[in-house]
Image (cartoon, rainbow, N blue to C red; front, side, top):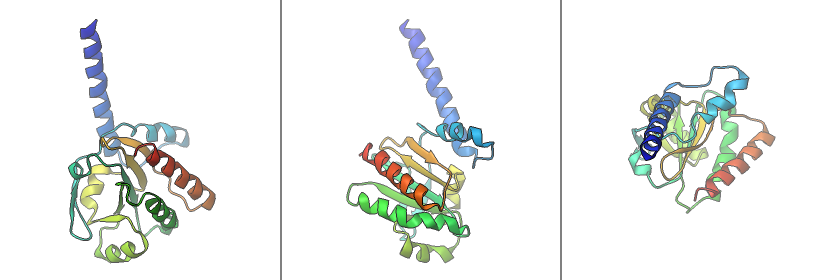
Length: 182
C-alpha cells in the first residue's frame, strides 16, 4: 500500500512539474474566454523559472536570490499606455508592505534604455534591466505573478486593466494574498 501511494505521489509531482514548465513556456493566453480561469489556474503551484538578470542599478538578481521571499512580479509594456494606469495602485501596494521583506519586481517588455530611468521615477518597483532574457523564461506578458517564499506561484493574472473599480478590487486582492503569505 505504501509503495503504491509513493509511486502515485511521484507521478503526480512529475506531471505537475511538466505542467508548470509548459505553463510558463506557453506564453500569453490566446484561447476562448471560458478557458481563461483554467489557464490562470494552471500556473498555481508552479516553481519560479530559473533566471539570471540585472536590476537597473546594476545589482544581479536570480531566482535563487529570491528564495525565502514573497515575490510580486509585474510584466508590462510602455507602448501600451493602459498598463500605466495600474502603476499608482502598484506603488500603493509596495508602500503597504514597505519593510516587510516582499520583493516587488517590474519586468518591461520594451528592452530599451529609453524606459530604464524614466519608469524608475514614476514606478517604484525594482526594475529588471534588459528584460528579454527574463521574458524568455516566463513568457508572461502582460501578467502579474506572485510567488510564495518557497518559490511557488500563488497568484497569476494576465488581465491588466485601466478600469478604476477593477484596479481597486485587484489591489485589495494583492494585499490579501501577500498578507496570507508573510
